[in-house]
Image (cartoon, rainbow, N blue to C red):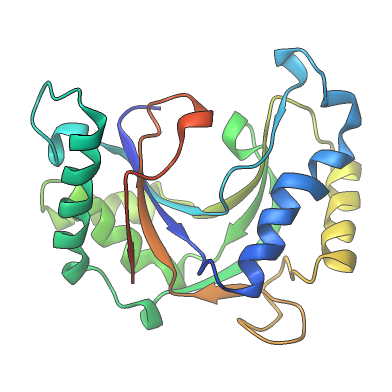
Length: 222
């Protein structure tokens, strides 16, 4: 993956964040014991932060000097840049993430994912794309949102095979034991199953690095 990425992370003090983190780190990897000590061809990566990618391909030199290789300086520059663009992003109460379906993907980082409804997050993704990738131009950013952007929350990174029967088994597991509604029919907060969230934090993450180094350089609450 080239450049950095902007992620939307659920409120970390919310019930949903804890449920998703447990699902990603423990519950789902336990369903693939054959991959626990697997070769790279049967790898499952656990423990990444629950998030919806707003855009990737964010150039590092957008917020730091070309050729700068001091990571502490990069982090400081990234935080200053993200705080500066926050004023142009939609407010948290205007961002409504709703789950739609449990899907299997082809990419390593999208092997099992919760598809997210486009409407509630499209404006945030649009502004992220305008500010971070398209140099302030709204037309190509809107075209990207309409034609390319497919928001999702990954649950498994892996190079494993998940057939329809396995997907259905995992969907039942999530529906019946986690308190997460994969179809978004639950509340945003509350005692019943949770089907999404409002607001959260935007993280800037150096996703050009190896996955274990995908920790935020900058973050702001919206």
